[in-house]
Length: 221
Image 1 (cartoon, rainbow, N blue to C red):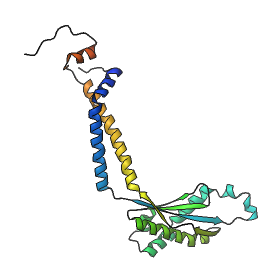
Image 2: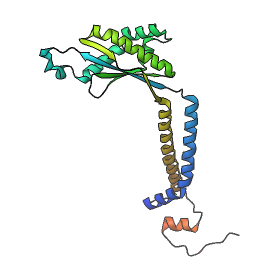
Image 3: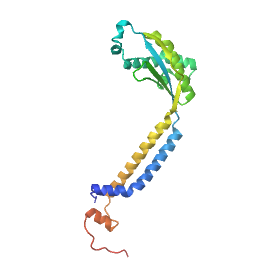
Image 4: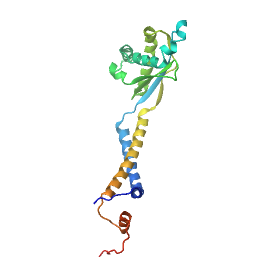
């Protein structure tokens, strides 16, 4: 016979089992962390900034922002950056052991707060190679973009910069998720297990569930 647990009973079960659930959650978190560090290769993000100056005539001055918005420019630069012309040039310059499609997957471009500055990002396991690819992409863009678009010039603002290990941040997220999930799943299992019990181990259990007083007990022999 299943027990019908009230909200108060569920809370009481969770309070009783919280320490065990915390231990299970901590163990699960440690397991996920160790497994992630063992099997996930580290990845680094290298970024470099470009200043792009579009040509604006007197007739275009008043309508430039509406006809060629920053969002459109970023999308255009992203397409150019990921085009075969640019990527093949980078692969040739650095003699990379990858294909155009493989290189395309690890690069992206972002606009810097509605300005004429864009950032090129490259993710690689080798931090030095990530920097080299970012800088070579910038050089290739500096050469090719003025030919392809109505651009005065493209200037590289700085050398490529490395951010922290991206894998470390991902592992932290996985560990937090593992802790939360293990905690809630273990508590849920304890509540379900309690609701499926059809026997009472103590007098208090009987009184808590039935709300009836126990008049007589039979001692163990």
